[in-house]
Image (spheres, rainbow, N blue to C red):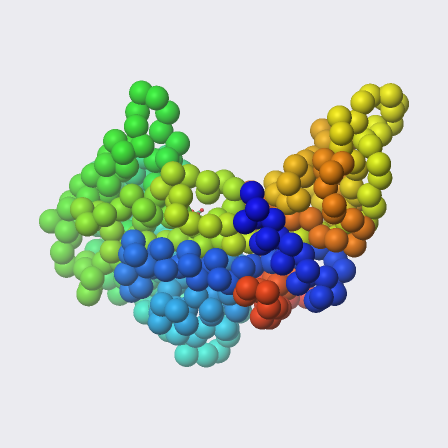
Length: 395
Ligand SMILES: Cc1ncc(COP(=O)(O)O)c(C=O)c1O
């Protein structure tokens, strides 16, 4: 594909001019912005919530916030939550999974002393009555209410409430502890939908999940209107399904992260209009003629040459130069990964090769600062969230 060749040739030249000389995680801001525009054609800025684990850099998030005019996040990791509250005291945060009680308590002990109003701005997720009762205990210790959302199971079976009787138990508990608990809303994730196998269909699975969400919500509205203080936050979807939620969706709050950088696992029909915007760029250390595998040196090299690159064994697929491949017989290495290219390829030592992450949440944390580029310009180096637990001495 000549377009790819032009794109990566320019990116490779840019990386050489930056002169890092180590593997970098490149974020293409033109593509990221175009992906965000596509997202805004699907949902309104006030209903979008960025998934912090999939876009794990405060400055990357700040860039997206500046385009939507809102600071709305879904968060999955306590150390990230602490950094977010520090960097964005105005943020509106929904936790994407229930947290161990110790981690929840830790938030209140370690949170920065700033304007972040946890009662108004932070929704913890509760999947069981037991978790709700922990929040009651916490609220009594804190002397202020704790805000919760209820996790619903709308078909993915990753936990949460899937029957109205169970929902009754949760909502009665909240009603019985009105001084301690504030119900902000609901979260029901539907990532199983695009994986519907035959004889199911993706569209039927999507309708079914939406209907299930709608039924549970109707039940709550009909029987517990007194628990609605303002509008409930009705959260759901994610990159795999965001394009499937049209006007008939019960949701008013949509989480999305990965689609903005589009790793390979998000090569889905519903995201066809989105473009990959994150690449691993790794310097070539060595180029050797042919392909020589220890003990089977006589095997033909099939018109290919060997590269050893700086680093490797990432959750990523070789993308460029054309024909770049792993070699399963040689194996993979985190230190100097072996890859092969067609002998006709002109890639050389100190050039960069490009790999496309299969997912963003772990991979984007592995390279230090993100290398933000726009066209042929290096715009900034954006630190990623610190991921090493709590600050030293405070474990
Ligand atoms: C509850 C929940 N919502 C939304 C998402 C979507 O995140 P992304 O858009 O990065 O796939 C996830 C991903 O794990 C999730 O667990």
